[in-house]
Length: 134
Image 1: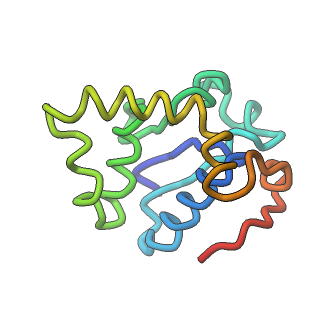
Image 2: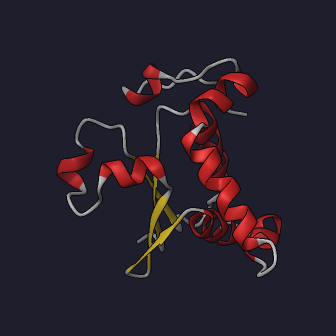
């Protein structure tokens, strides 16, 4: 059973790439990734508000709801790469990082468009992702 359930936006090319990378590194199956864009999401996860999950990354970790960069840091820690995200949780950096993250989350489709050439991936939302995984 997974330690972390991570709720991500499967229509966001950047999100899909990060989840793909995490999944490849998660050799022990410690993370369960759930796409909030799937047709059956609300039926399978009625306790998760899709609007909230669309505005901030949500996760369930040992019965607790965690949000934003706390989810990111926990996920990368579970695959042995927490040192990459640890500075984002340092007391002096955390408030700024959290504000930047919220800005990023609001503008993720535009940022995806600039960085990947795709603002939104409808095929990912339908379960047929055509973004190449490295």
